[in-house]
Amino acid sequence: MRTLGHETAGTIAKLGSNVSDSWNVGDQAVVHLVVSCGVCSECHAGRDHQCEVANEGPIPMSYGIGQPGGTADYMAVNARHLIKLEDVDLAEAAPLADAGLTPMQAVNSVRDRLTPEATVVVSGLGGLGHVGLQIILATTGSRVVALDTDQEKVDYATQKGAIGMVSDESAAEKIREMTGGIGADVVLDFVGVQPTVDIATQVIRNGGAIRFVGLGRGEFPYIAGDTKVLPWNVNIQLPYTGTLSDLRQVVALAAQDKLHVEVERYSLDDAVTAFEDLANGRIQGRAVLVP
Image 1 (tube, rainbow, N blue to C red):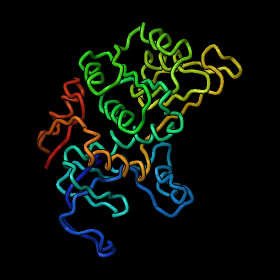
Image 2: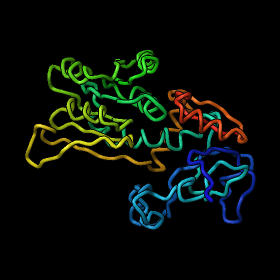
Image 3: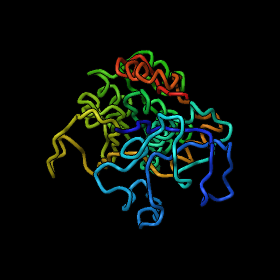
């Protein structure tokens, strides 16, 4: 039996005997999603989300995924996996552990490309995508094109300052036209289904970068030396979770009111209803269980 809940924030109820005096009962904190040892070569290099000790399989060991998660009245957490919260609502802080963390990792991995002259395409404005959009708008001067099949989400992106566009069969052509035929410098695909993967490969420019964050199982052929599918020098990564540093940056943006996660609150007893609402697309942002 597994305790779910991979995005967790809460109030410290009790301290272990080895916890430093920088923490006190009553402090509020968000839990870093990925379990890490803090001493291996990857952790020392700042890549604690790829810890060599804690992550023995293809998916990083995480609270709620391999380790007991936060859908409980109490949760035991190593102090090194906590980041203190100030001026951030607990319910809105909880999704930062993934819905904020993973987009920040994706954005940071292309940070050198996000110049004021760059065009960035954000596909999918759901739980992670609407946060990724805010991170780019708050921390770069790049032009942002935001795609979604839901007109309400497209309108949301436009209100935030992006160029909102319905994600359909004409989207790729429109993006290429607005970039003078050059294409986008960066594509962040928060969906990963076939239509969004197709758009990513059709609009990316020579030397651009694609981050496939969504897990929608879309695919594309890759033939070494053939530029019909991808132009030269395109960089592709599959971001998953992020580092403690990434999470600190997300928390700082939230504390400065530069990032806001859309949440629907449910009592812990109504967890089944929350999952049903998620499965049926009735939640725009994140569902948060409150004990």
